[in-house]
Image (cartoon, rainbow over all chains, first blue to last red; front, side, top):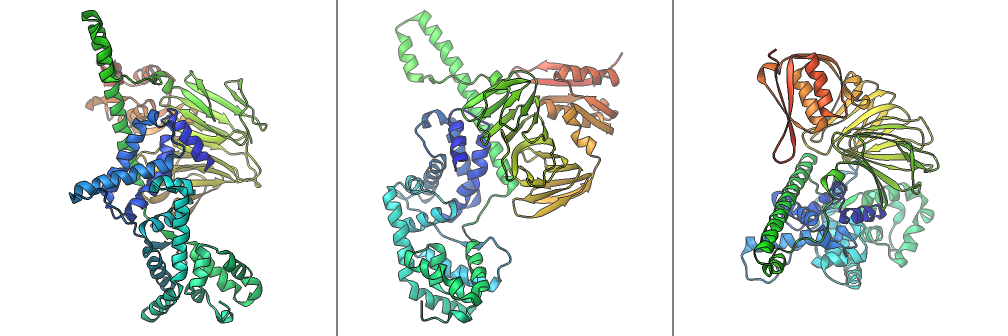
Length: 190
Length: 392
């Protein structure tokens, strides 16, 4: 984390060479986030391209930015909104993008039947949360972002993020009995 | 929670238990007590319990990534668009000043208004000359080295010398970055005595002094390293695509971040273990070359001297064509070289010294072979070389 902050500062001070480090660290994270928001590969590549180009070009104006990652995520999200707006051609003020959570397993040694059941259960649990709750939990779990970072990306206060996370998890707990049924159900139909 | 028959639980049962899952994902104070004491209270199910935890631990949400080749290509397009943008800006600024000067001559009152409209940038650009110098970056400090090559030594204490001159000691654990632009070279002795040669167009990241655990460095570009053996502290060379782990040996890592060149490791002697981004592990023996392109790798036997001679400022060829030699020179000096068709197939064998000055290298080449090499200055400031047959 501290390493990222040092690189971020050097980048903002005009060092082009560290851009590749920022890119290598964050391009995949942005891509994954964009996939969850429901965009296709080419659109996401365009958005990543535009966001990094803009970052490079407008570096000097970003002296106040404390966290490059959250800035990138926010810019990325905004760019995707722009694309959506053009695509949909609606009069809607701001299209809301819902994050879809897809579960996978890093450990390939896991029993496939078990993995499938767990995947169904977790996806159900998580996708039932509100978009904000889902995004907050996703960023906290996958990227270990601080509340302040998530707040900047979702454009809310850190306090609100804390509430999203706790309310989201609370909802999961209160749906526990339903989950038990779901687990039994998936076990039966597997 | 207390009503369940945990004694009979298998890993699968844990994973079907929402109480367990929720504890894994977000430990609540009340539950935490129950589950953390679980292994002690139910030792017979400990193995299954641990297996279940491992499974949940490997859960990934939206684990989508770009393919390495795609990712690198995208980066290239970002950087080339950025450079194009910079030249457009420079052009605009030049025009602005020309315009402003004309305005001053013509009618002094007009000037302020013009400047207001175009809003010239207030910052001063790093001049291109400075950007093409070797530089050692440590925290906020940046040392520029004007010469064509740099020799850096790191003492175990963290003291750093560049070409014999001591620079302000960086904190030993801090990561330093050595930027070696095109046409430049550097060699560096690390705090444990390991020697590293950095090829042109590379960025090498290293700590001023290694600590107790792993010795870790990063490269984007190419390096050749002679690692000081130390069984207590494995040495790891990290790059964007894979990690190369050794105990003490000599090898070359080639990992420029562009999709044209496959990344590779050439092992001169000893043994290394490479771990790719996907977690695959490959062991190499002497004279092995590991080559990674678009996610697939091969391991072949090679003559290492051909791949590592650059560190001594040489290219070694055995029955290569002039075309191939030219390609290597073009890549090393980052110039465009145009070669007449009738000389392309000339046979070359031996060692070619890479002088700091491109024209010296070309002079030697023209002495050995019946060719003429002419360097021209292009209007955009870059250089190009024309190779033709010698007629006299």
